[in-house]
Length: 91
Length: 389
Image 1: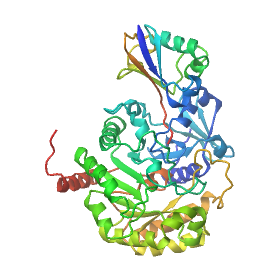
Image 2 (image 1 turned 90 degrees about the vertical axis):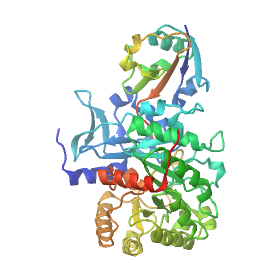
Image 3 (image 1 turned 120 degrees about the horizontal axis):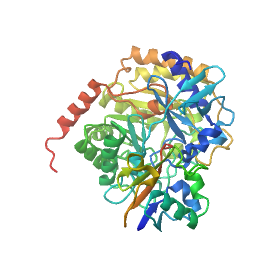
Image 4 (image 1 turned 180 degrees about the vertical axis):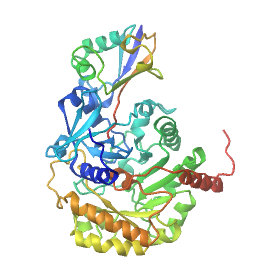
């Protein structure tokens, strides 16, 4: 499945400034692995050493927070937009 | 874990705002540091909001350059809950508001709401106008407590985008008050023509109170037009009561906007707006505290609420040589009590809407009461005769 991942501005230095990245994946875990393969180092900012999403990182699939779906095992479908949003806003 | 008394929380809020907080390794490992760079265009400082015991929300600087000497450390407790550690206050339980849902929302034009505004407690803060639409009044300085303005790709946020952002903040982050920041907008009319469409549209869309920070008009009577547009509270910032001190910290602004123009604007606004709805920021450390102390009764007597504002380092400005002196928390607490007495004596204490900085800097917590909401609804009903969708 081709999905898009929107990268928060704070992490765009790891993606060469790209705001949106296209990857092939069927779950959030696969999508994160695909992003890491394309842009090494980004997963470490999002997940801990066990691969679990860091507590203050939120991931949305469309309008849904994956915490209310199936977590990182949540499935994605063709054309889905995955949004990574830091849980705490500065400002 | 001891929960401090209310008075102690008030002092803690102020001290936290003043000193910032260092992040513990466990908090950084949990991704907390991502907050540092996630501020939206409406951000008014480089910090994060912490909710202290009693529900008081305060904005605390976490920039390492600023907070490196702070005695406060934010860490995760054994249960995984956030806590604040301090040698004197001990361990204080805190939490953070999760505004991700609001920031995830996008307007019809595809702009993330987090890029348009920032939510602090009950406030949504937005700066609809791009930096280039105004003048870069002065290079950010440590003591210049005006919000940093990020140059936008586009000229400004449209009225529709600002309203969509306010609706998202209302629905997903509990924001019930809107603050429009236009202090950089140098206009002869005080920004009335630029701001009015935004204020009117916000009033039409939501039963919200709207406050504005701007530069005063040359013709002080223009202030009436701003009030008529629906603005509930206005702030013209003096920065320092002493004109020379203000000119030192904001030399370019002072060249365009004189101290007299600011005072005339404030006096005119005090005749138009409800009691307590006209305010000005005095940044502590720019002039001797005795001057600030002397300014409090003078401003209060003219119906102007003096806000005692603390400076905050602006992005990239953490290592600037301060243009003033750092003020310890104790004398600020004394000034704060003094200010409260003057505001009460002049009937300025209770106002239905307050200038935003008081909430941000932690001097006075503000949660809209039932009466505030009723007042907002009344102001709206007087203004909005019909809404069509």
